[in-house]
Image (tube, rainbow, N blue to C red; front, top):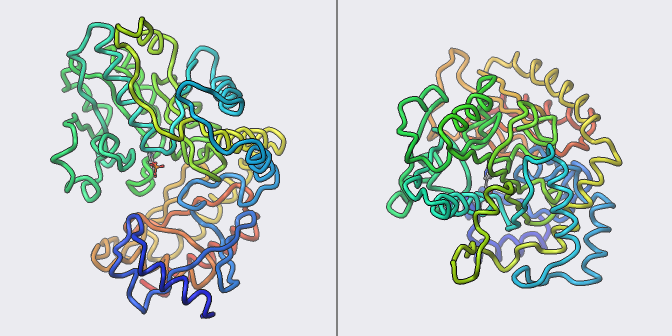
Length: 428
Ligand code: PLP
């Protein structure tokens, strides 16, 4: 290791606390954290000059690859004008243009208003607060409970985490979470007292942090029907699935389902800078209109709402989708991913393959189907080994996740699967 890298790692271990990371293991001299310095398409380079395939799109955010010239140029051009201005009381052109663009990406009338925040969790918080206030404003305050699914993940802020169903992430914070109704399927909705339900939230098509778990066909349509029948609002969390991941721009487009709130983040800026958006419709928006003294205002916001650099990046990313016909090319890569997955399925330790568009989960178990002891951290050790073969990714327990940037080449996909296959054999 070069002295430069060594000194950075020493300082990191001295001053930093990383997310979702057991810092004792991170600081163990046997573990070598990577200092990433550069990206280029689907490739990341570390401070030692080693290259890796970005196998999870830098925590599911990157869409077109790193350092796309059009996105970089748009951000630089905006930085040359102004980096940030307040969205409370003033506005800016990139935010205006992006809001118009987002609304028009979806079927006419489905959404008409965009509320910008900074990340996936806050996109959810906005939907939660708008929902509660909406029911109060229209004189139905008894509708104040939320429904979420088992194993759901909607973010880590207290509100978003209240809706989460992965107990390892939520259990400790339960005393400050709000109570919700939890269901394991759309069939379970029948036993709810719908009259007190304000909204139901779902990750459409696939639950990501649950380990890439796909919903049965028709789930979203059934959910929409139930919501319509019982006047319950539907919140779609497309933080992971939005911007092409499932093969269409948004997962809800596979079923043609309209939500009352559509929450977007991660890939919104192409994964370049933090930005999130919560879209809703005119009927909800108009309930908040009134005189100041009516106190119908949504008293919610963050310092960086509508940040113009983020909005410029998002506009550029959406333009890349059009110019490069990204979704058409992605279709071919999704097919190739299926081919690679069916090959890796031959590995005796691969128990199940779960694919949703350009998202793949590869669950490893003992050849007889028994799960590995969770304390053995098999998934994590496989990913650690794959790193030595030039692939960066993170598992969810023993499900290895592969969801690279859409610009990844066939050769890079081949190399990623050679790395994964070998790493599984080495560790299991
Ligand atoms: N919702 C889903 C479906 C997610 O996958 C995530 C993050 O992984 C979030 C919400 C939270 O997003 P963020 O990490 O930007 O707060």
